[in-house]
Length: 383
Image (tube, rainbow, N blue to C red; front, side, top):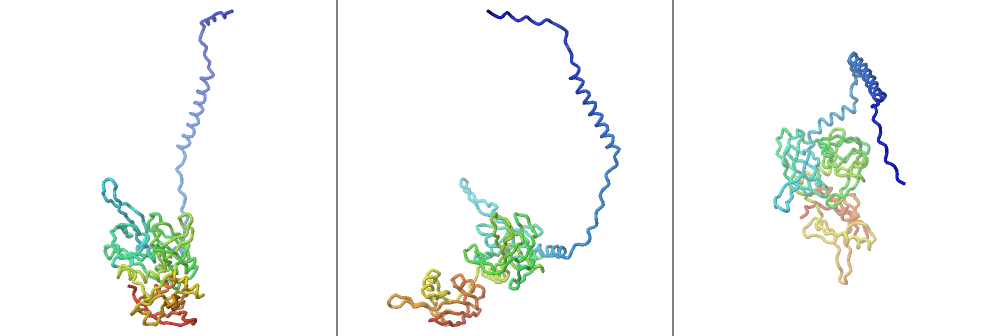
């Protein structure tokens, strides 16, 4: 019914198994012998003989040209660091924090530095580092957001300043080799090469106004290159690197530069006045009203809605639109060309005028009472 209690084991002699002990011993002997042989051979092995260097030969002409261009032009390029003021909510202390970096270049021996307006936009102060890595606090001289250009000034010794060589952009050709020097992603004085991919592009400035005759290039331009120079093969400035077209935000081979002919016209005005002194005709226009009136007339151009007393437009005999006694509008002159450049909108008109200086004499082609009339006008400064 119940199990009987188990019988305890009888004491006997302990048993030893030799196999588990002999196996590690044998493995240790084999491993030791192997290591002894390897170390013995290694100690008796002769030292390695270094490989002979294959002579390279001379650099080719293009490499020499690239090296020389960078050596001559890079001292003109500067590294710009911008700072922004921040108010601490709890302590009410104001501190300056890094905001961003960009590029620029030395314009003249007076210490003027040219860069993009958007590099400085929203910043409280800016530091400029020259090629020798010497940093200077920069003073803001002037800006032209409609061209995305700005000018700073630093108090560097004249011997440390290397003004960039200035070229022209009016004679550029698609396929011409170009070089960009800048500070992409904070990597200072980086050289990239490419070609002029297209000419006459239009991009939108930070002010919302179009920038005309922009240079398109496939030279790698990345964040941090903004404000740096685009050079031709002679090392001359032909543009200011301004924007890229890229889904990722990095270079996709489509970069844009403000042409140097625009830079050479804008920068002296910024240095002299701190702003652009725009040439005007002395007329008033309105884009929305213009669209309605020109559509009703079935013409393209910009209608003169008003002529300022004593203006160049009045002296030239331009006619403004008037309102008749019955409330209808008597059309004025419709400007369709400025020195041969077609005008279809107010932006077209402003762009055509800004390609000239105050005091220049331009010829307008206007639609007047169903016929085309040429009207010469001397441009005056905008008030």
